[in-house]
Length: 289
Image (cartoon, rainbow, N blue to C red; front, side, top):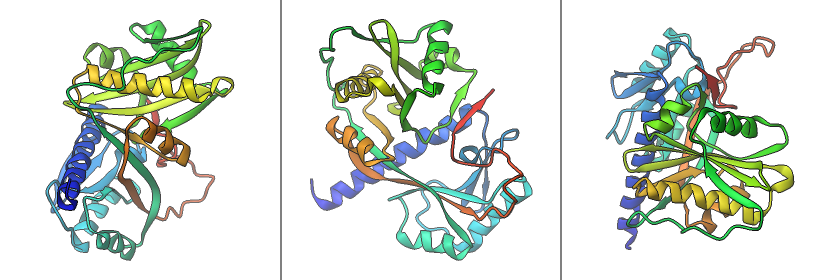
């Protein structure tokens, strides 16, 4: 593949990631409105940072500072922290400088790892160690177990997706084919979980967690590969996830993923005193409906 072709393919992948995340935010009730050359995404009830932000309008290559300021003013009117989310790689480096000149600073940077799936094939079903089984949650009991594992203090969350994790729509999302929840058992005890969400032909590995005592490379890899296989079975030709740490990214590369850019969030410095807490943060994309 030539350099030009590689750049075009990378941008194509990042646009698909962008569309997937935009759809995920709308599914949980976020509204979207156009203000000049930017889109305002906001949730009428929740102040969660992942659901309240300014982003460049689709197919815009450059956003002047006054246009960005209009969007930030609209967020202020809505009582939200001024924040801009965008995918690095779709916009030139000067875009970030414009944000800094507007008084915004980097709040979070999340590397994106992506993999193309050819003809609906993943990594294949690998043999599992003795006593290990992997299943999918298909009922409320399985969903409750999935949540217990993910929220348990004895589990390491290895992948924190850039798509909010929410409580309340799991059974509906599974039944409608919008997501798959995966559980890994060792000797009948749940020790790992993963979640994959779908939008058209894209899949997002949003979450992967393992019990600390069971965090062995072969088990983590088996759970990761099962998530990729679920995307292939769904007919997806692209699966992506976040790679917050080098160990996360190394695991992804072993499964055929490549470094594909980053999701960047720039926000106005929050000058409210620390004792005034709310859910404006990007630290934990979890909420209940």
